[in-house]
Image 1 (cartoon, rainbow, N blue to C red):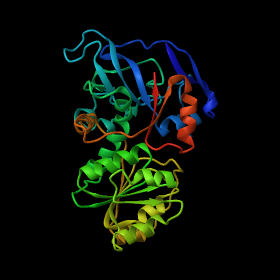
Image 2 (cartoon, rainbow, N blue to C red):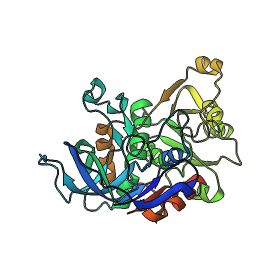
Image 3 (cartoon, helix red, strand yellow):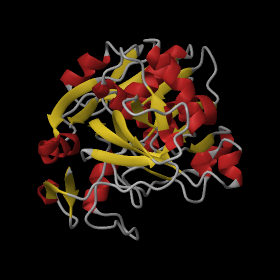
Length: 344
């Protein structure tokens, strides 16, 4: 098969469009013909290299995949058929431990996302996954939108609904409206009946974000986010902050919280080390939550809103698989608004 792989860490130039062995199925797995694979910033981190993390080489990234089932390891269950149109649950887990069996597979000790270390991903013509990771998609959902949905919308749902326990009428600050998690979180928060504020980093992105459903958009390079939030909320602050940027935004995210507010974080694209004034933490009775993807059952839940047309991923641009390096350059330069998708 054709695939995009890297054999060493580095810049986008290390990505090679080349021949690679097709996956070999084990019992309980399906082979999927990839039609679309959406980019996530995790792909960039994998290519650059993580401290203290070994990425097997050559490596195929790609956590967000949609395509068609082309083979099922015998015996095939009755609800899985060759030709079935699917998107893939990106979380990979053992399926046997207490966390998995209690519906918290994202807390499994073996949990990781497709395309990370031990599970080659969707930058390829074919990918294999456990049968339980297949999610059927209706005929009216195209592969590009289906690939752009799972990881970001599952992550945002888990952050807002499960971790933050968002309530109707609460105020939410969602950072980076143009990011995958940002655009997903805005839509889910509005769906849940919250008032949403968001941020963007250019005049063009601010204008695009105004159509996202947010009540106000803050230009984070020209305005102080915390000061604007206090102005917009009559000095109260927001009940929930959806944080996934890290070092560059952390302090102002904490300052934006109301008393009893909750901050949920799922990433740190600008750096992992942050500071925290413990006086603010205890005096304002704040809560800080970590969040990592979400369990399979939550993807099935949030997907119902997608299939019904109540949630929709924003597509920035599509690239052919062979141009994956150009796609990652666009992502790395923060030129995108919405999801960048490879068509295979």
